Length: 102
Image (cartoon, rainbow, N blue to C red; front, top):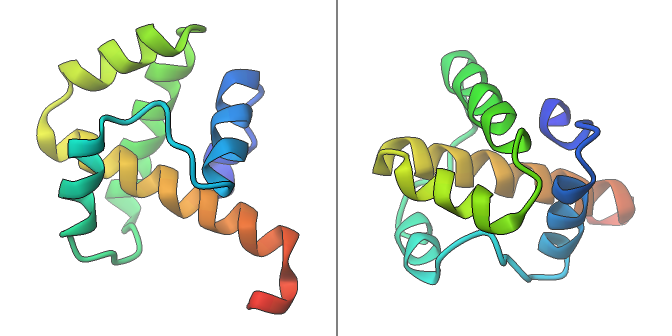
């Protein structure tokens, strides 16, 4: 998921870094519970493109409150897609830091 983690928005970089430590301030706990019940398959090409558009939409806003507002306005399907992409980005970051986990 390099297309997500390589964004220049420092707030997203810090959110990804917090995610590697298990802290997800951007997401409501209910969303995470809903996400945890979903199958965690890799994103297909269409989903990657949509996740990238969602990422760009959120990255236009600097504050975490504005990002949360955008997430609240998304459909459940789009929100889960974004969360899935975010978690895959966090997973990639963790694996990059700890190659012995591969």
